[in-house]
Amino acid sequence: MSYGDWESDAALAGTLYKKSKPYTALLIARCVEVGTGQGARQPRSEMTKVSLRTFSEYAEISHNTVKKYLDTWDVMADRGYVPDRTELEPGEDIDVPDMKVWTECYRIAHPPKPKTEKPADPLVEFDTDNKRIEQARSLIAFLPTDRVPEKYHGQVSRIQDSLARITMGDSPERNMLTACHAMTELVALLNEG
Image (cartoon, rainbow, N blue to C red; front, side, top):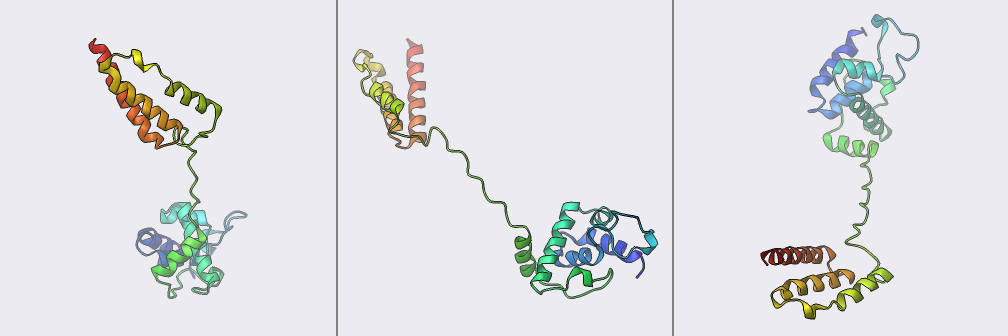
């Protein structure tokens, strides 16, 4: 093998890696040897396999993508779909698995990150038996609405009802929105005089 074999494989990988993933993985697996290039450097003319970084730079594919393809090849090899990459040489063609196998092995090599739970919205989830919530319920229940002028009764009643429902844990988001609308209407009426 001449040193040009890995270069032509890298150039080809750079044009194919989004279209033919299993074949691109073959190109990478047969040319990359992890750890190559970290010690004394070989003359370029004597290189048969290159480091992941060298291949990545020459192919113009991100280092991370080349690593993922190599990891996926290793899973395919472990499952018996392809030979181990140590058995391959640059320029050596073999049959590669179809996309179904590739996808299965890619997911094994790179499982999706677990979804992180969002912190609870303090308006949505709270302890309805809390002492402060009990105090709020009492205040809302005994609001002196008898002194509120008649034209404001609808808005005040909706605010009172919505706040009471919120303290009970009944659709807090919807009831908060209802209370905000009623408060906006009340302020508008108050500004009218």
